[in-house]
Image 1 (cartoon, one colour):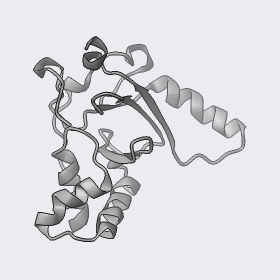
Image 2: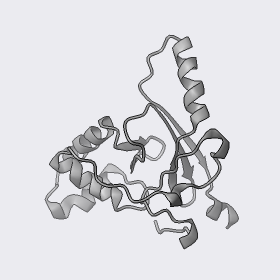
Image 3: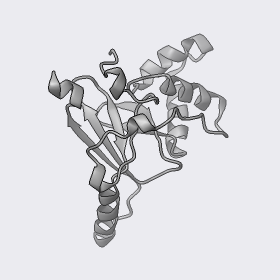
Length: 165
């Protein structure tokens, strides 16, 4: 896929992630974020996978990551899957179930409620931190006597550029 965003709409950060409150959830705040530095304490293969994801404009599937890492000597899919599992457990990446692909997380640490805007035309993904979703879902889950590990909301539609086309 090619990067279809005009320069004014592009984020400085690959796998664009925007933090918003519920009142400005519709605004694109991604351009205000700087490129994310690789976290410390990663294992060798986690560093390689992190670098592959951070160099991508769009979410990557595990086999796409493997293809990018073959030059560094990574040949086994399980190597990539283990690194992805480790990065996800540490809260550094997210899996987009609907796309079966991975993106970097822009939050400072692991978080339970994850909200994404997924463009069905150009595959851009933006992660939102919507305070209302986090505030409302946790009490509802507790009231249902359920121990929540992750809540992932993938909102599908068209980004502003694709909607205008």
